[in-house]
Length: 487
Ligand code: SF4
Image 1 (cartoon, rainbow, N blue to C red):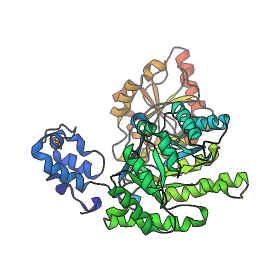
Image 2 (cartoon, rainbow, N blue to C red):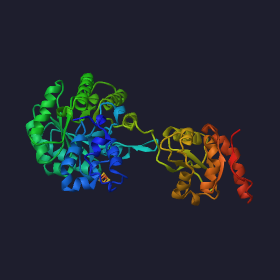
Image 3 (cartoon, helix red, strand yellow):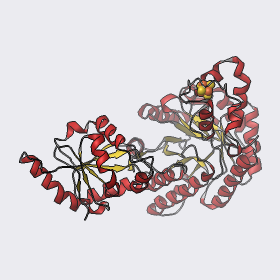
Image 4 (spheres, rainbow, N blue to C red):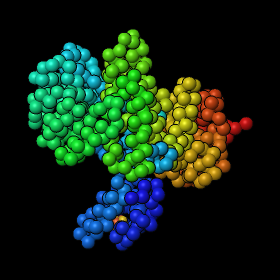
């Protein structure tokens, strides 16, 4: 079967109904084929293909063609679920990576109540604003350490009642799964893990309660895969693998993960195409001092994210460990085909009021973060209208006709900025000066051309904006036509 990067839109198109009915939201079947190939839509959006029996064969063939090299596994149910795997390529630049590494924080069933609550709080409250995204933690791994399955069940019940996140059961002891019984069916946690010793029994629980399962085996990749495939033959489909990642076998784990990914993506070897689940918890069993453990866990997690971990079970009780890890994950899993963008809309800088300036900028993430940090540094209270320039910087978007006056006019209406300020002045970037007239025409607002460099904005606002406010307050507008702040 050809890899997705070798497929052409025509190969996809010939399997579609070719009626151009637009039910998928696209103008034509060819447009839908192109989006499918870019992984920007799903086959299921073509209702005729899915529902009409005459297309059944084509539907099945298309599903096979677009099947990911790394199988997709769902952990949890409904709102409390997360998908891992579903990857197509070895290198991000070949297409894109699909699913960010899921980060789970460990709770042990021997922990005191306040420690358990503190860890639940960490997962619930960890929010790091990065560009216009909020980075969070994703799951809880409950570790069986007490030797008392009943105690484990109580902790499991407590945790599941207190948090809306998918769960992972970390235990090699079949007794734990037996005691959990129907709770497994209700929560569908990831079972971690089946090993050489327990796999017969634990895979039976995975099958009976329809839970995904991780197969763990260190030191012998062939055996790991044969174990995973033996479990599959017993009727368990949702399987992940863990080649181990103790700091002492990190090189082996990275090499194994890389080899498996290569075989799955480039050699079409379905037998190794399982998502990788692994753990950084062993760092906490080492003799390192506390601060070194915080640091080493972040380092180890970073290596594993870069080398194909789909889910990481971590232990640190401190947000500081997760901060670099979640930022790295965000960047690594961004789509290389698109510039990093900010959601268009109205942003508030500081505490703007009805006399604060309204500035306009593009939605290229880097420009946005420079402009906002210049304004914040200068303690400017302002409204910032971020228009959709498809991720292009101001100068490029002006040249490419992406900094469009109509978009500014639409955004003014959509955001209700007219009701938030008393004036009708827009400050546009110096690099968009040539559009001043057409922006005034499209919006009906007067345009002031701001500085070329946003680091001059605070000074510019201080001098120019004060004059405008004074003229507004004195009831006379001396501002006729577009103004310029450029020297
Ligand atoms: S719904 Fe299917 S048949 Fe209709 S236009 Fe889209 S791809 Fe073509």
